[in-house]
Length: 330
Image 1 (cartoon, rainbow, N blue to C red):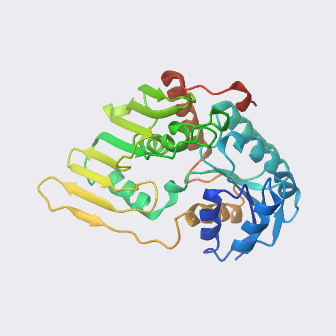
Image 2 (cartoon, rainbow, N blue to C red):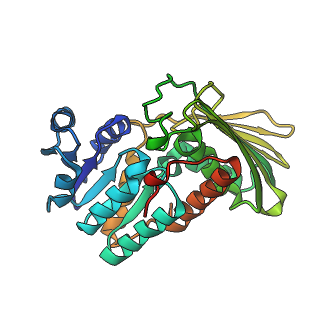
Image 3 (cartoon, one colour):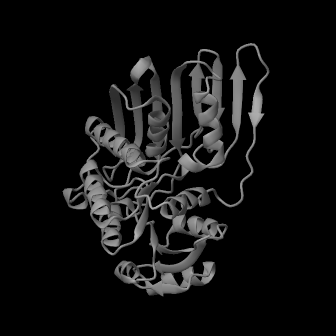
């Protein structure tokens, strides 16, 4: 089993969870971490057992020993950081949202192709066992024909106008940070919508604190989606079908449980107890693809990411969600 030298770019909150789960994979070598603060890099490296610590992202990308980089910076930096690593001959697993907009994503894919390097958006939910079981139950016709998809992701965040969630210069707001999950669910289960209606409530800092979305998909399937960073919600997904309905329980985007309610039958419950946080499954997919010489995953493809970011762009346009132009360059 070939071992891969992993680098982590930006040791923030999600990077801690990812690094912890990376230790569960015997073919993952925790090799290097890069931060804009040498102190933070050293502390992170010491905590998880990385071999090297760098006080800049550039030093991490320039290290010839790094084979694959997990990009965990705020999403305003995903484009520049990913292209930098791809140009230095590194495979890249980039946190969601993959970019600020479709144009940035297109440029990232062109860089991956030009450098013949693997690239994948780190939409970890796509790989976790509870989601895979949920998807299989629906697609096998257990609940019959899909009629309505209802999905939300809401939580009340501490208000910090300079923080990642409320600062427009950091791409703040509910849609790109957590609304992406319900949108991903709808696209995965029903396809790209034929039409949509989206609205958002902006706060003092002019980011979308709440967003509400309605999709009409092929075959007449409807999706009702919403996100918020100013109130708690159920954070669950329910798909209603002609034979009953199925619920992926709170917090549905991470390893969770499933309840199945079929017409005239007793409910069924499915539990999942996973090691770690669940990030190991996407990392494992990256290394499986590298073993096969692939540039892209066949489970969560470049087209899947393209459909997702294109749909997010359309929601933003309709809901009047705008960001300063300097954070969306190509």
